[in-house]
Image (cartoon, rainbow, N blue to C red; front, side, top):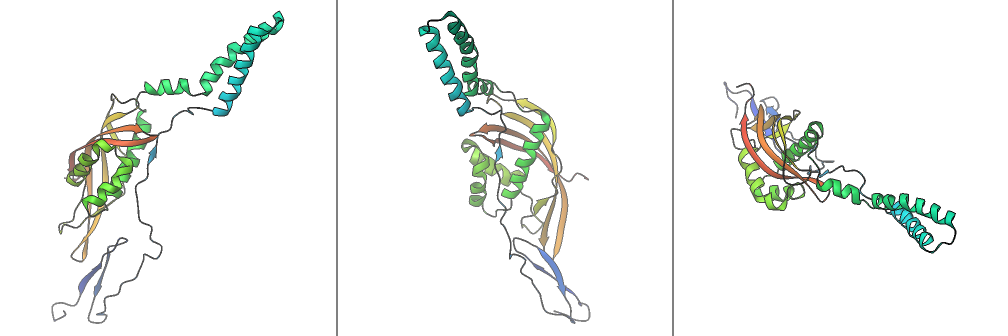
Length: 253
């Protein structure tokens, strides 16, 4: 490998913690590799909980319900006027309290909920973008789809998996996957309500640093994405329901 012109040969070792770059020389011609995976934890997506007002307080609902029932009985069957008046006053307060603690008011309000405010929506989007970057570390379509399942609605799973492969996957000149790091804060250009209560659609832009290895050297580049994203609440979690990547470019170009 060495002659009068070549005195240094680049090396690279690739694993899920790498790539690791180095070189061999005539003085040190051995290729060394150290196992850094003794405590490796595989990254996986994390669900994004929907933060709502507490919907029900069963203990308090039972207590006020019993008070309501007793008060009603005393109003109907009581003999003293004072007792009936006191029972009626208690009943007037206990019945609405029972309905409130049962969660009926909160559930009714949520059925007509508007989308979150821009700051909350930006936080939800950042968590979702981090999840999508984790999905992109998977090397096969089947694995990517399996990783998407907890954070994507079932009806949109196939379409979103295909769109991620088309628009969000970053590859090096050699074709290997690049890992996206240093995610910038999402910039919401638009935030619109949708027919799904509490859900929203947004036109958003964000930047990442992409790093990957190719033929013994590292490729590092910045990429800015712009996408139309739809997110809905489902079973207490925020889920991706639509994704269209409009643009992926070098921000310095």
